[in-house]
Amino acid sequence: MIITFTANPSVDLTLEIETYENGEVNRALSSHKDPAGKGINVSKALAKNGIPTSALFPADASTGQWIIAAMTAAGISTVTTPIHDEIRHNITIKDAAGTTTKINALGPVLSADEKAELHGAIVSVLETRPAWLVAAGSLPRGLDGSFYVHLGKLARDFGVRFAVDTSGGALAEVAHSGVADLMKPNHEELEELAGRGLPTVGDVEEFARSLLANEKAAIVVSLGENGALLVTPSATIWAGHAPVIADSTVGAGDSTLAGYLAADVRVRAESLDIDSANVLRISTAVAWGSAAVQLPATNAPGPENITLDAVSVRMNPSHTLTIKELHG
Image (cartoon, rainbow, N blue to C red; front, side, top):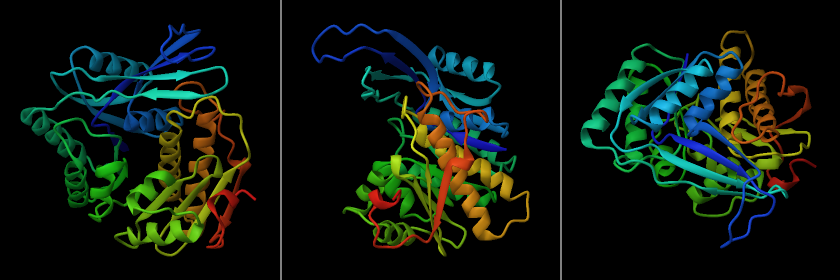
């Protein structure tokens, strides 16, 4: 079982328009509403591919109940705690040229009692000893990056592996705390964390490796159309998919993380050497992420969408290669 934790869930409303004009009345050609938030998106992708998962998140009495119903309809179990403030709505505007504009709301403010209840629910799911606890996305007001650090320490106490996909100050706190077994920043987020540009494979590898806290820890750095790099204490592996026509990039990184975790479940059930296992993990991650960008809105890819054989892999690519040269 893989437990995802979404501290700041949302309902994502995607509006498709012909041309977006700032300051004018824009009429939508179509709209689509999805339960979302990074952890929820990871659970959606896992469930669609037959990987047991449960999504944990705080839920209010209106929007939260809609998310629960939508997840249940998709066959995904949920664990929720009540909050008073309403869950946020995020808006994505996509025009005919493929340009995407996102507006993300702040989300609710959690009270001390609500934080305590959320903490208790997390302890309860950790007691079931899942394979992974995945903390993903932004934090609502009332929580800060130290909460993710605390979750990582809790997971370690229960012998549960801890994955994190967040950004900004929360990523900085987790990255420097040594509690994460897996982190999945994109290239820009890693550069922000480093406080400098990381234009080459060597730059990314050196900085990412400096954040690894133990011999089994790993960082997946998503590179958009240039694939992804998996950095472990002993190797760096690049994987890239054949070019695709993107429909929506929203949630693609979450599918990338879900693919990595799904492959991890598989390799732990098989007798694979460490390099073969890591190649499968990063190849699957890239295949799932590439499948996701070809789907509308925040739809998760299923087995029929995923093309693992279209993924190329390079072990320990040259340190002098720029990120943009990796597909060459």
